[in-house]
Length: 196
Image (spheres, rainbow, N blue to C red):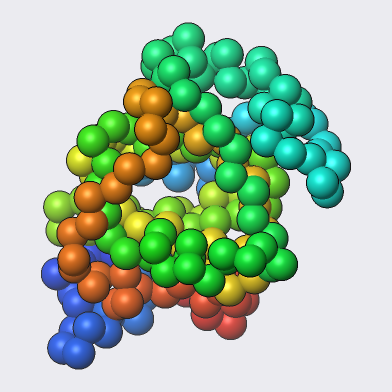
């Protein structure tokens, strides 16, 4: 289930610990879209209509979702598209997780469509931190310059289409702020006993 937690970052406690409860915790897709929209974040639910073979390569994934890719490219002019697919056996999963967990920005919008699995987008906007568990069928557009980080979990299992305005793909400017360590990671947010 797609989940949104919104925290008041000014409630961060000494030692980097946060207040135990978010101001909002919801799985209501309409409320999620509304809250994100108020903060300039695009969010929609699309059907991930294609089943991907376990060994599907990038070309097969992009071909399976050609209509969705065309839809996004027409609306935003994103010239470059790729697919990132990770599973618990991926040899670089630990290094990639650590890289994505560091707060960073991009000079372009970060646009993703999740076609399998799940991942956690964390957005640091003014005095708030928004944590969005994206699941299969979730499309998100984060404006350029938004401070954020991403957690794929300790046992990653997701596939997302990534849309870029440049030919270089994923390019990040890291803030150096250890803020991500003060908020729950994906595994903790998905624990039923940890849900507020």
